[in-house]
Length: 431
Picture 1 (cartoon, rainbow, N blue to C red):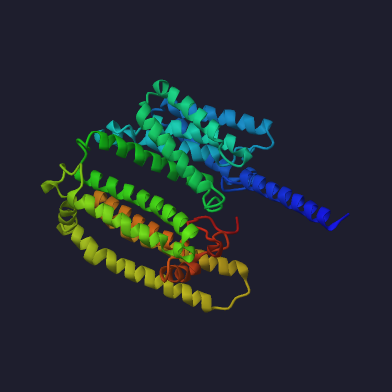
Picture 2: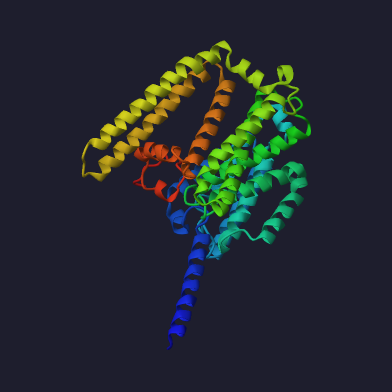
């Protein structure tokens, strides 16, 4: 055999190996291996608790049974098709039923303006049916465009049966699908999100986009100022992520190492856009004086709110984070060959942040300031998303400092050296 023949044979083998690797990645692109999902016993407990909750609910919308029936069909399909991801249905029922079940349980507490924006258990149930179709179609390594469009048309056709308007349904389904692709793509963060986490955040993103579009259509008529301000804040967070992705793609292609500035450039652009809306933006007639940022300053400087912002929360944050940092450093300095002890100490430090969260959130709830607490949590979440995006995109100066801080609280499931997102895992590593 000549050298050319040998080189050609090696090239063919390399191509086949690459194809096999891509196919394997496609079968895992929902965030976990099929074998791991099928053997995890906790999924059966979660499914049982959800079904018990469904049975004891005083009123059970038909959409919940539609999702349960769809899951049953998915489970039968999985047993007939050995190639299907989640052959035993592990974690899928919990992921697709959680959102509609919570929405149905609290439907009576949803304000009228939000119900008018098409937020309903039926809408979430349609999204869950889409997720079941997506999981079934994901065997080949992704969602084929024709199949995705066909499923969207079929679900839109079912909107009269489910009692959902077509326009918010289409917006919700498109937003959910795009978010699912982002959460579960192996090229990005498919190894970070569990199925339930990814589906939950995708459905919340879809709800936000559908409600915002309906509110914009009516110029947010009957919406309270706080709801409008929070909606624009949340949409600004999505704009930031989209701008970061676009800046990263452009800079990495044309400017080499300059892509590390993508998150900072996107943050600056998002702040400018939000400031323009806050000072002169449309749909601001519901705000006193017509200027959202002026209303915001007046709102947060009310007596009880100001006390939380300037006294209680800063003291708790400084003492809690500093104390946890000192304790973590002390534990790290203790030499120990006992792996179980190291894991226990690491988990104990992480639980200290849970106690800090309770001390931060408990008093406002007891004092009847849930609305202000919700606004504060939204702003804090956006700040954390911005910092985490800067860390993952390796922003100059910020990334190294953030990596050094979070590394003390992570285990091997979150490997920041390969670009993993830092997520909260309440389960111990010994599982």
